[in-house]
Length: 271
Ligand code: ATR
Image (tube, rainbow, N blue to C red; front, side, top):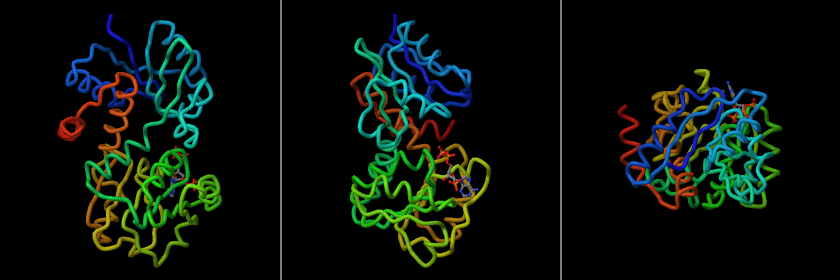
């Protein structure tokens, strides 16, 4: 029988992961099955256990269970521990390993697909929730000149700064604190785009040649990307590349094979 994987979440019906992993499996000739599992809000751990008993080899975890997935893991990778969020579970005889491939997916999309180097850049990260926490360490590992974390609730940005300051140059504040500054890369890791909203950003944030990246995918022109166009950002990206790249990283962890992502991103964009 083919090895069995799934994405687990609530809701999960909209997930593109089954489609993406089917593409990867076809491309690399891997014999595997990948489904979507809806876990009841109060029964994540029990649903994972049933999956595991049925011989499931690994799971992708999505909203709202990434923190709970940390708690059921017997081992966490450093990047999952830093993010306090797990999006990939790997089952083996000696327990459950929890990893987080979101940050690596973002970095690969920005640096490899979009060919935008991060070293010595002035980067603004908007947001200080789970999505932002997952990308701070991978961004710092690429040695930006400074990473500014700005959030509507300043205290939460400050807490992230405190957690990560030893890994690189981080400044925290709210959106008023960044007035007058210019950035090479602005990443929207708030959930505002989900509600068609835009955080109250000051004008003239974008330096010459800069990139605006919204980690939200599926909406071509989020309010943030529209703002970025008006404000003269040179490059725009939504999170579709990150979505495919984090999936590829999970696939690699499970199967030991790295699929080609470019054709999958292209195909997904044109669906
Ligand atoms: P996620 O796991 O998707 O990051 P979260 O942990 O609930 O979700 O965090 C949501 C983030 O989006 C927070 O940084 C939130 O700002 P606050 O900490 O001030 O709440 C931010 N956010 C959501 N809607 C926003 C809006 N309309 N304007 C500005 N920031 C917003």
